[in-house]
Figure 1 (cartoon, rainbow, N blue to C red):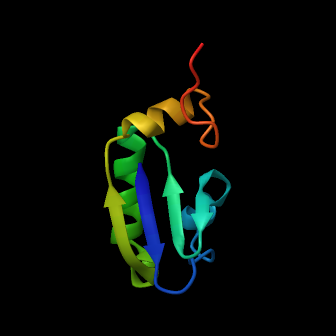
Figure 2 (cartoon, rainbow, N blue to C red):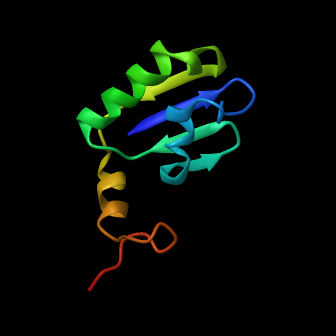
Length: 84
């Protein structure tokens, strides 16, 4: 999981950032991406080492939580766990 927090707005004029737009969950200035570890590291390297860095306020790179895995496997956040 990668969280990117932009200072004002995402620099969509940077092609590498614009390419991520369809894959993010956006909440205000925060972009959250659920990626494989190798891809997550590549995204962090791209935004911290290129033209997007000036627009970046903060980022977090973390392994998926149990909730992330549950939701990725089709769990519904609104229902919580359902006993069957």
